[in-house]
Image (tube, rainbow, N blue to C red; front, side):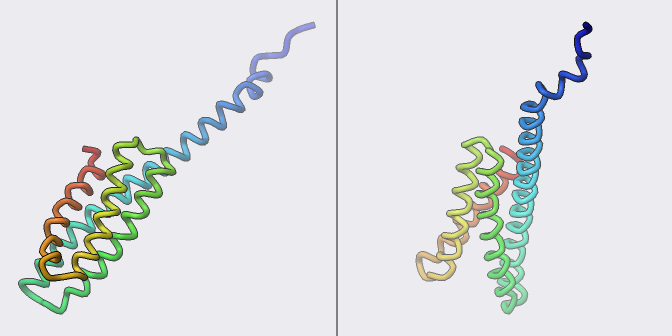
Length: 139
């Protein structure tokens, strides 16, 4: 009696590998989504700076655009934290995403408080921009 050809026995040993490969591809897709959201956040941050300058020097009634974009960036920051855990992003990069989310929430509070605490709003924005750059460009 002849042994079964190798190609008939292969699926039984490949099943665990196929599951692992599918999980890897799925995680890769989520990591890609993380990168896209990181670039989107950085782009939105740059637009925020532009809108702040535009509102300050040209059209003061455009502050509402700056405020609305800021709230949108909060959602993107939260999405990055979720994606960082789902995609199993390395812990150091995950911590940067968490810090970015926290500072983005603080940013909204600083704008609302005003007064002496509000003067930290642009300083916090610089830190947010640096963290966003680190996430987008993996620095």
